[in-house]
Image (tube, rainbow, N blue to C red):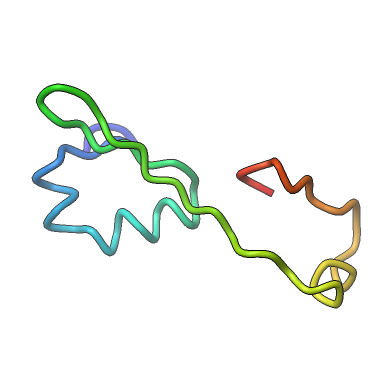
Length: 67
């Protein structure tokens, strides 16, 4: 891994579970390929009203990929 979120393609293929968990926990992961890159982003599913209102503070913005 070169940066916290950058992976060489061959490394990402060998460690795909880590790439997916990192995308879920820390945000978009970049997989660097020879002629471009892939951006791996976790998009959470919808939450129930009970889940939304059970936490203190403002409600997260639906369009924010990192609530």
